Length: 293
Image: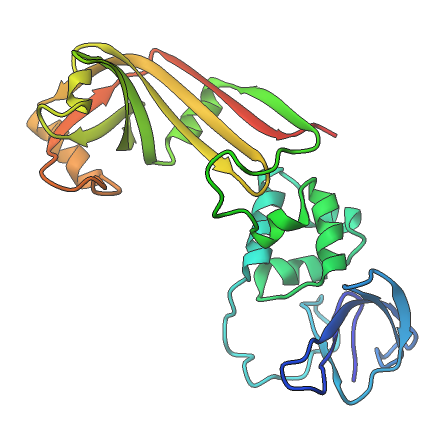
């Protein structure tokens, strides 16, 4: 058995279906990587000296060229996908603009181990998740995906939230993700807010609807269009509001271009071939996230 710093030591349970134990190798006692090892256990966050037995194996991470290669595995030719926890860790790290080295340093783990968690299927223990949650300013529940089935707005708020105004460029970037937005308009029966599938083309917001429908009443008037995103498990989110005149797109070339370039079909189904375009004259947005450190 040979290992490098940052590799993972996995202890398999002798009982079928039993709980295994794993930890990060944080200390070597021999230059050739043979046991014993100093291991930081993921379930207790404690570091102990370990002489691995027959029920243990080393999960190797990628190492610089020249390092002793890991022994081949039957599934070595496969390209594994990251697990849900790894995806959430990577997404939150990238959203905050943090490097792996920064997050690994805050979480007291090797950058190679963090890379492993983000890029490959992994089942980190509570101790590892707790350190990662602290490094990212979020919670263990958020990294595990808890609360995803709660009604909107019922997730737990951040301990130290910060509400920030978004600039016009940030608003345009968020709008351009395409998806579902809400158009607010005045109808003969009073104000209405209706969700629609939308596109952004040449800085204009466009959506398909049916003549005589509520969204079609936006044509010829000033309307508001809102799009947002909520991360219930992390207590974070953003919203963008665009205000401007709405018009019916009738030019054949423009209609063809919108139809051919549409990312989705209207979720409401049916014949919805009327394109309405909104040219924003005011663009504002806000984001709720962790307070700046």
